[in-house]
Picture 1 (cartoon, helix red, strand yellow):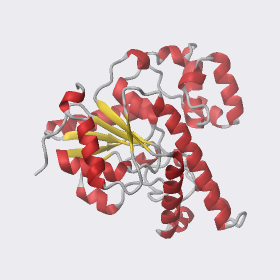
Picture 2 (cartoon, one colour; picture 1 turned 90 degrees about the vertical axis):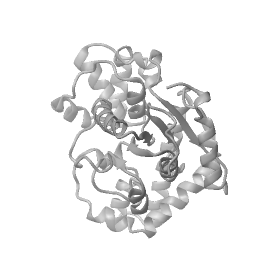
Picture 3 (cartoon, helix red, strand yellow; picture 1 turned 180 degrees about the vertical axis):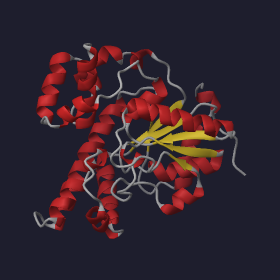
Length: 308
């Protein structure tokens, strides 16, 4: 029988890519009577299950998973839409008397859910199409000209986040950092933890996961995925593997490039989560038993360690 849930508010289990969030979240949900809510921007979309590292079939069968593969590849999604979808799902989980466990590594989506959003304009498809045509460097230049503080609250290496921040500035005539300032003062809804690894260990985990993806049919998955023109086109590894399939690079070169891009993404995630002081780190080590990790997590989230 599952133990009593730790909180009436959501619990957030996050960390860099390949940090082991999915498997730990399943074990936690089984222990406390929880259901999982996805907070990974790419895993919201249908397709590329291996490339986007969605939970495997065995994990999906053990515990209810929500907001995985719920959008078509052509759909647009931003933090505001994600928050609306997640709130609806969490309310349903709570109505069943279960614990909502939000798991994923998309920092802005987690922040939108945990701290709320300012009243931001809806997306303008015409403007978005224009912005997508611009080189990233030009989008960064325009954004920083309109909002110098964007360097502090926007992951400037991520084109989607830069486009949305610039869109907000252009549509409202105000710096997006001012409109989003509620992030800095709002109290978080729920409690969270960031899984952390030594850098070299995380890089090895990324290497091993990438090679496991390949062994599980990654090339075949990418070859079968059509050019959708949507958010999934930005999935790490897609461009590199397509180049290999076109005969433009060797498989080893494509896989090495995919790993390098994944390491860079993990570094950006680490920078983001270090700013989120409301979520303490949970350091992990190789060969640490899964049961021991779960006990550490439960101790960290014991009722005396915080409030909802």
